[in-house]
Amino acid sequence: MPTDFLDRVMAVFQRYGMSMLQGAGVSLKIAIVGTIVGCLIGFAVGLVQTIPMEEKDSLAKKIVLRVFKFILNVYVEFFRGTPMMAQAMFIYFGLFPLMGINPTMTQAAYFILSINTGAYMAETVRGGILSVDPGQTEGAKAIGMTHVQTMIYVILPQALRNIMPQIGNNLIINIKDSCVLSVIGVAELLYKTKAAAGALYMNFETYTITMIMYFIMTFACSRLLRWVENRMDGADNYDLATTDTLAHTSGMYSYGDKTKKKEEE
Picture 1 (cartoon, rainbow, N blue to C red):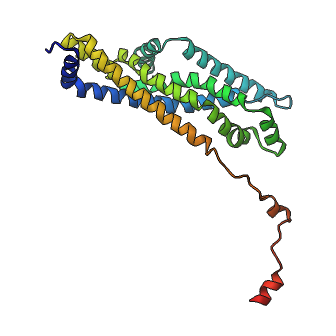
Picture 2: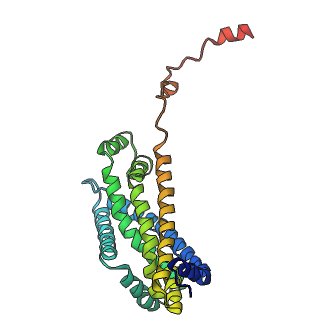
Picture 3: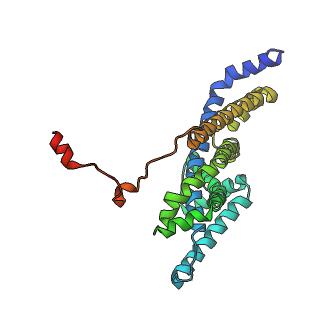
């Protein structure tokens, strides 16, 4: 083995670089899928948690809504309050065999990371919805929109922009936290790193390569999400609309003198 540090790093990468790159691809894929599915879970849970209960609602509706909210609160508090490593061991080696489910390690990794992310995203979505001015909801209800329509067409588009930084933050966290899933045998980046370091007895050099790979993945995702945020903000310069679009439907729009047009023809 070379005596220079950089030469030793290159030697490790030449021998185990492809294996570590494959592990990095697995980590990135698990993180992306887990974040997307977790966001969908978070949006669903966050929407249910923000459903208002009114006095005119029936007793059955109030009971069902309270039960659903209680179950979802238990889900959020449990997965936020326990470490993901313990969750992975509990679900893969305990819950799945108990239920007779036999997924692959990668499928289990998708599931574990998704429900873990969903618990955090639920609170993020709830905070994003509450951050929108209440006047938006009142205005939507004033024109006859239901709660679902108000959320889909008025509140969520505004809340999504507010929570985009947190979505990006969760993706970066998931890229790094995917290493926890090596405890159930998922061959992600840290799993490959341990194998390379154990074979060569070169921990410093091997983990240097791993840190660089993690930084490249997180930095690229951070820049990409920042670009998406800027696209959602739109252009800095814009023209104000000077035409009243309601004039067409209110009968105020003038179509001109049709008799003159016929004479000219």
